[in-house]
Each structure stands twice: as C-alpha cells, then as structure tokens.
Image (cartoon, helix red, strand yellow):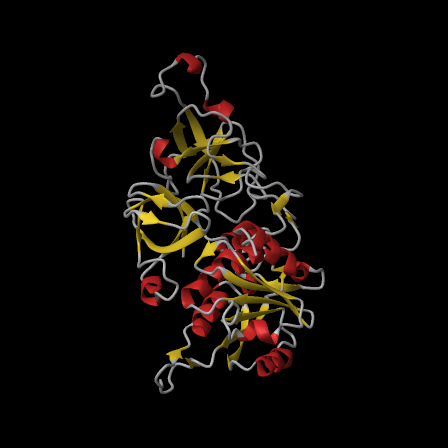
Amino acid sequence: MTPRTVAVHRAAVVALLEGLRAPGRTEVLPLVQALGRGLPQPVTAPVSLPPFANSQMDGYAVRAVDTQRPGDADMPAHDAGARLRVSAPVPAGTTPPGLAPGTAAPIMTGAMLPAGADAVVPIEKAVPDRFLAAGEEAAVTLPATAAGTYVRAVGSDLREGSVALPAGSFLGPAQLGLLAALGLPEVAVYRAVTVLLVTTGDEVVAPGQELPAGKIYDANGTLLEAAMVQAGLRVRRAGIATDNPAELLELLRAESAGADLIVTTGGVSKGAYEVVRQALADQPVEFLPVAMQPGGPQGIGTVDGVPILGFPGNPVSCLVSFEMFLRPALTELLGAPAPRPRVRARLRHPLESPHHKHQVRRGTLHPDGTVGLQGGAGSHLMHALAGSNALVHVPEGQSALSAGDEVEVWTL
C-alpha cells in the first residue's frame, strides 16, 4: 500500500471528527470556565470600546482651539500656548459637566471627556506641571494642542455591532478579557471532547507494579493522557488491554458509551500479534502507513459508530501522532486547543531523513534562534523527548540538512 502523506491523513482525521461540531455539541459557560474552549459562532460587540470618549493621560481636558493663539502655526513649539482658567476636576467614573470656552478641566486617565473638550494636554506639559490645590491661582498655561490629542475616541478599539471574535476563535485570557470588557458574563462554546484512551499489550505493566522480566512500564497512557488534558480534552482511561482481540473488542464496546472518540496505542502495525488490527477486523477501520517518521502505522475509522484512532505503540510515535493529527484536527474543527507556535530556526547539527517521509525530530529551541537535536530518530527515546521543548520538521523530499540550515519548529 502506498503510504499516505501527512496532509492527506490529517484531512482524513478532520473528516472523521466532523461530527464534533454538530449544533447540539455546544454549551454556555461563565467566562472563566470557558478558558481553552473554541467559539462555535462569532461574537458581535453589544457596545463600543471604549463606550465613551476618554482621556489617555492625566492632564487637562481642553478645547483645542482655546490653546491656539494668533500666529501659532508659525511659532516655535516652546513659545506656543495659552493661559486658561481651571474648572472642576474630572475623576474617572463620573459624568462631567460640559467644558466652558476658555477653561481647562483637570482629568484623570480613563475619565470621560467633558462635552465640548476635544483634546488632552498631559500634566507634565502644563505650567505649573502639577494639579493645582484648592485655594491656588485657578489658571494654567498650556501649549498649543491639536484636536484629538491623547483622546480615546468612542469605538476606537471596537465598534458596536462589529465582530469582536470570529467563529473558531480560541478563548484564551485575552479573548475572555475582551468579552468581559463588552459586558458579557458568559459565552457559548463547543463542549469538551471526551476521549476513551486504551493502551494495549501483554508486555505492558502499570507504573507502581513489580516489573517482571520481558515487561515494560506503560508510558503511553500517562504521556497521551497528559497531552490530551493539556489540550483541553476529557480523558477516560480503560486500563491496559491484553493482546486478546475478543477481550479488546468487548472492552471498547463496554467503555465507549458517552465517548466522542476512542484512541488506542499499539497493535496497529503489520506484525503477527497486532491486537487492535485483529480486534477490529470486522469494523470499518482502516490500518495504513503514513509517510512519517516516527508514527508511520496508523488506524482510523469507527467502532459501532464511535470514531477511533489507532496510534503506534512506541511512546514518541504516540505523542507525534497526537501532535501531527489529532491536536491540529481539533483546532481546525473546534478552535481549540490553540495551535502549536511555529517558528523558523537554524539547525545546530546536521541530520539525515528518509527522502520519502516527513521526519519529526525532538529538539531544544534556544534563545539565539537555533535548535539542537535531542537523541536520534528512534521512537523509543523517552529521555530525549523529556529533554525537548520543540518538534523539528523535515518535510518529505528532503534527505539531508546541514548545520545552519533553516527548519520549521513547533514549540511544545
């Protein structure tokens, strides 16, 4: 079978999970509880931001024309200015009276601009350069100032009725802060995806148990559950399945009620004892090669109507499969989790890659814009993975790169 490209398989995963954005899979949550979710519909601004013209500085609200004197346009900046009477101060949170001609109102940052005022002179440009105390001479000299100076106009950030956040937006702190600024206490979001996670293998033992000869501890369950939880998924663990196909199928059917997706690890290659392949032989599940290293063997389909993804059994292959296929598919469909940041970096070391595969290496991205490789290309190198903060991508068609060559890097 000709291997699928990474892009084709990712598109297949998106198609498999299309039902996750059905209309009934939304809920309304208080803002903070919506952290990390995605928007099913755009949010329209119910008010303008800011909702009223306000001061950008501590200073004096003025009519710009009152600061101009005859010939100001030809005068040096330090000579321009006018002496204005000081009116009542404008604290933030109050509605001030209109500004009379020939006066200047002391105003605080964020305070509403009085009617008639169209500019603000910062306090440090006033003479004297401080607010006057009660009983002092109630006049101040201010430099010539253009209309609009240090004024935050109504809607200068966002206009009422415009799109505040488009559908598919990821709701991080900044997005939730925007919704709060618009006066919205809650928001409609996609429901969190529930995943049934099943690790397989007679050779696998749960951490904390005695390790008999020929056995290994289950790293995949913890690795994938942590990655999924970090991405905002709800994970149900079904324990470690044996290599008995009938028992595995029975477990999947018994545990998958209420799950949006099943993810298995191991048992998807072409070996003689590939339990996931054997258990799902009569299900609409396809087992195929993807032109990727590590993580080439993949399973995709449904079990009794529930979508299932079969990842390889080696730990690094599991994580790479999640990062390359499931995580970006959920981002595309639901707006969450947030995409992995992608940067260009220069290799610290040369590397070789199979010409016909997309290779994903583990690496450490450094502040100087270089990336060093951690370990080799092997899919069992957990210690190298733990010491990495990035995935280094070598696209299909490239077989060798030199130190100093640029590569795409996804930060973890």
